[in-house]
Image 1 (tube, rainbow, N blue to C red):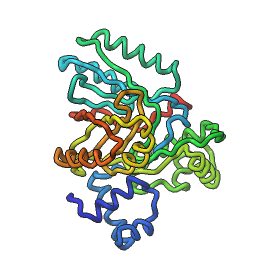
Image 2 (tube, rainbow, N blue to C red):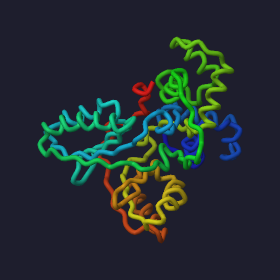
Image 3 (cartoon, rainbow, N blue to C red):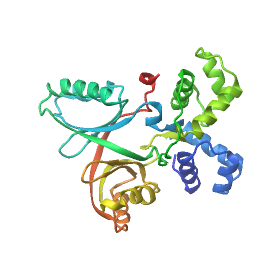
Length: 322
């Protein structure tokens, strides 16, 4: 299925907020509600869009730290990548070019949980050929899955989540596993699913809990899971950017995060202190993107890593946090 400009616009809107009504999408695309519904249906049926999911603030569901690992491995030790894939803390694992051959994103609850992850990694790496890896700590998240993160408000009272909240969030994260639908689950449908899994709850209570989770910014946005390769975005890059020290927030929030090509942005403690995931169709588009980056006077330098293979990409795991 080839996408025309209307399909591309609908997809962009769904990535930003798939909870938008057909009426709102109709106004944005200047198509009828019927035409929008049909086009979304085709994207779903053709396997370009897998279905809705939510973007959560990891720290507000107990995952206080986001950490990146780079591993230097040997092609003759596939067992190492397979072991990393099975780790529940790892939600992204890519094969990459350069000095290191694997790049992973890990979510951990606290320092104790990080030490547990490090012990597992150390044990595995002790049996590898190069025995080399590095850890990059994410200091702040600016954007994930195409949804911008807002700065935490000072003195804001955090929401205490119970088991029902976690079950609601888990169903919303993994909606594609429980319901074959191109649209976000309604509170009625969500209520039925909760009851099926043993949680007796009313629809008004589900509505109130969801509203509270959104107001307290536990749920930051509603987006869609997509097949990037089928959509023609065959190239993924990890781009690290060196910025004037007093301009990190402005560059990340006002310049990088709004760019459609960038799906995720993080502040790290590295010299090249902004790390971003980038999706483009080809190297030519990537070159155009780099030229666009240097329009900012605050960007000093960049270096990029090509993703050769996407081995794992899954929603947050909340099971350890219940």
